[in-house]
Amino acid sequence: MHACDVLGHMVFATYDTPRPIVLFTEDGHPSQLAAVMEAGVSAYVVAGLQAERVKPLLDLATARFHADQKLRTELSDTKARLAERKTIERAKGYPMERHHLSENCNPHLK
Image (cartoon, rainbow, N blue to C red):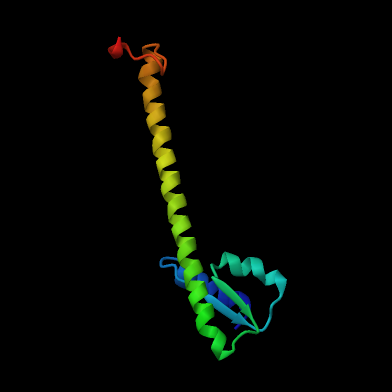
């Protein structure tokens, strides 16, 4: 199976349920790095399939994956809050414009 096919299968397999992926390869060609990153690979290990290295690499890939997922969730939540805030600001603007009020002017406080 060609490397592009393998990456395609990984993207498909993890699309709905992201999970850490460790890719062991003998070919460390730099041109593949962008495709590997796009496929969501957590660790890209070139010529490193020695038994004593596998567990630490898997542990590191899992930790990096969870840290990345946390950042993605925080980014998504922040974007959602920002979109909500923009909607609220637009909604506030309509009556303020209609009644010729500024944001600093609150007639109920006078």
